[in-house]
Length: 190
Image 1 (cartoon, rainbow, N blue to C red):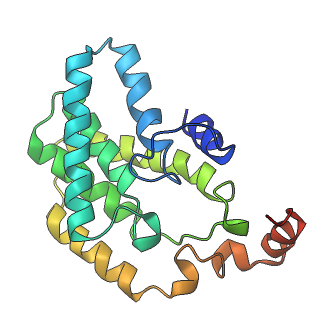
Image 2: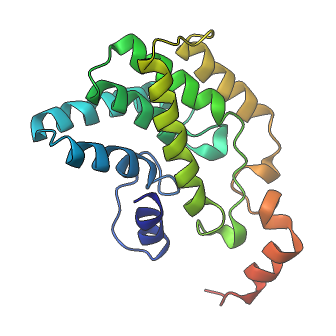
């Protein structure tokens, strides 16, 4: 699901940018299979999505939802939401959110040719797996040593210190490799 949704985005099809277009496959790939497998009712799904939006809003307010700004908020939102759907507490959701953010802190955003195909499409899979693992740890009773608000603040601090070339400019990271440059040059100019 993560790749399918992200590929739909790359093909300019209609997607829900939750929270961003580049990370659009994370939430659906985590939530849809769980909701279908356990036949979760629509009202519970809506409540779960409100919780997801709430965590996203806190992250956006304290830092940013964009991976280019320091971390993957989609993975964090998905992990907190999955905890809710599995019957966990808000504290467990916060711990899952913290685990997910800590695991993808300082995310380099380096879209080759300025497009999400490389590397974002496949990063959606990593974000989904990270969300599920973070949820599992929280549901097992593991607590984050650093509170979620402080993790979010650290994400902002890390993002603020990252060079601009690694923040969605297409000037660093994979975009700056010889193959990345060759790929970008091969695309038609708009």
